[in-house]
Structures are given as structure tokens and as C-alpha cells.
Image 1 (cartoon, rainbow, N blue to C red):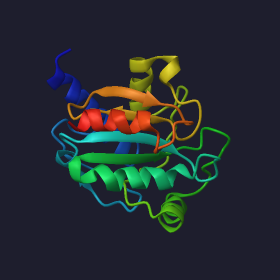
Image 2: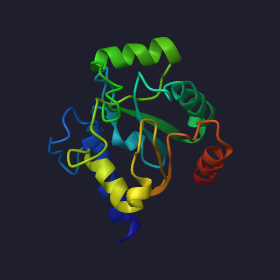
Image 3: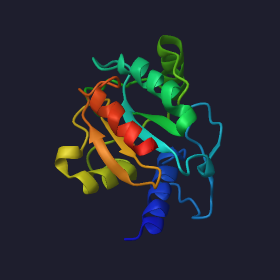
Image 4: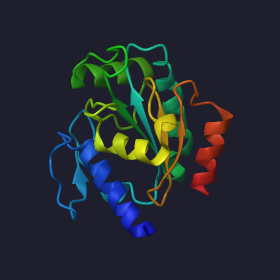
Length: 184
């Protein structure tokens, strides 16, 4: 599959990830979607050429403190074309029971999160969001989320290039080196 087709496929999956419902059919020429809990639209054009870290998140998890590190990553690299996108999920231990508004307030108040947070989605099983199904097909069972704060890295070309388990802290040299390699 050539890179242009793969990039369009990935952007379509990301559009679905950020639409108000994962089942909303988005026209292929649509460049606006709703990723934020606040409902402010973001153009897909804003993501073209960016390196993206997609992280399934939860507010009541032992890894929740990673929000702080994710925000630091976002602030450190955003001027170089880096984006962090948080995807709240209640799939693991029911650790994200909140509403969109509660999740947004929690992230901002406790961790000063400024990167985009999506609506809450399933990230595992038959009801997993299409992005997570695509990631599982790309990386297999080993790369599927086993818990909250699993991370996927997407290159500037729109390719899923790596994954990092929940135990990989945002300050991990392995993660930072992978991000820096993609930003070059």
C-alpha cells in the first residue's frame, strides 16, 4: 500500500476517533472533526505532517500521574510539530467513569492538560474504536493496550510506527528518542 493511501486511511480512522460518535460516517473530503471535550473543531490539516502520540487515559488509575509527563512532552515538542491526543477509556478496571465534562475538568485542574482529549471510547475488544482495531492489526496482540496509558506513535507520514506499554513513562528515554527520531 503506498504512503498516500495509507495516510488517507489513517486520517480517516483518526477522524472517526474524534467524531462525536465512532459510527458517524465522515465524508472523505471532510477536514474538520470534534476531538475536544469542549467540542471545538480542529481541522485535519492541523495534523498533516505532525508526529502524534495517542494515549488511552483514565482518571482513577495508578498511571494517571502520567498526564503530567504527557503535558510536558507536548509542551517540549509541540513547536516542532508534535501532538499528544488523550483518549479516555473505561475499559480497564472501570477507572474512567466520568462524563466528558468531569474528565476535562479533572485533566485541566489536576495536571494542567492543554493537549486534546477526545470523547470516551472503547480501546479493546469487539467494540474497540476503529483506530485501536487498526493498531492491533498493525502490531498484533503484543501491541494492543493491556491497561490505561498505552501509547501509539504516528509518524509525520501518518504511519503507526511504534507502541509503548503503560509502564513506559512519558519521561522514558526510549519514548523521547522515538519521538525525536520522528520529528527529524
